[in-house]
Image 1: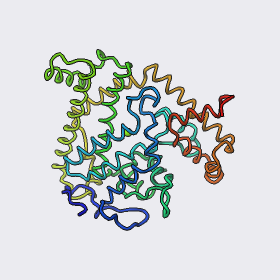
Image 2: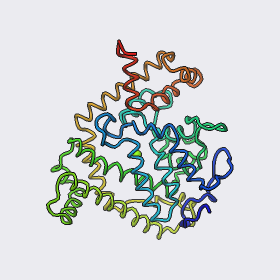
Image 3: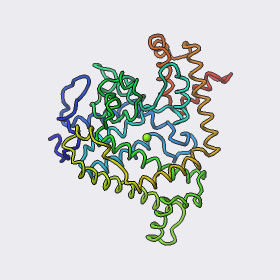
Image 4: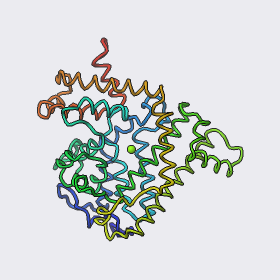
Length: 376
Ligand code: MG
């Protein structure tokens, strides 16, 4: 039987969803949101996440997070919170696994470069690109472009959207014009994303040697949980102490979201998901947890994202993305034929799609093929 898991009144369910753009017969044994999750896992864009940067370029080390392992961690955290709040876990998982599908190679440096290249052509934003990937770019089905996902999955993927684009996007853009919230499942995914990257960037930052433990201990969130880990395991040190600290940080943040969201739900008592969409944001950190999280973010920005060795990587990334885009714009005949044909029809947007779809190593190779004499 489908839908046997008990859901809260404020959860998204198949029966209150606006469904798919192209009507399809219901799946035989899965739920509709399971089908969405499965379509995402089988997509080409999803497999590419394996070779896309989170903070460290893919070839810098085998143990650093990639967009794929990041997305899996987001899904894990989102599912835990969703289940505790009796939300639609399949939907939360689908949103989490798809939320970064539109990322360019080389993380935020790549996105900023591509956005600058697309100035005057509608810009580039990874969030909109994630939606574009599942709505248009995936070519897998006979009857439609994209993955034809449920409305609520698409709504959750589109985290931000400027008003001009929102108008073009129809139903899924409407909430940005009406200043409404997405479902709780989508709100939870945003928080799970933050919890995941703050904690794994601490772990990867330490592993890379760019972050120093003495400095990190001054951040209250880290210091407090390291003290707890040491109280439980006196004398613990090295990687085990880092892991015992980080797992406690994740646990504290997850429990905080469950408790604070539970309080807000008890106050607002939304009757259904439409009431959730009309209400102020209901999924949230407590004020104290939000402050602790913010202090960690500032630390990571100053000590990791702005570290000179990371800056070298981001500057290289910017150059690669910009030069690739310009070369293709100057002469679309350098593109593989199917993309060249799309540039004739759709203009620079098709170049942005091609560049955005590249993995880190594909972009590096493509750059070498185009710019290094003697390479083919
Ligand atoms: Mg993310």
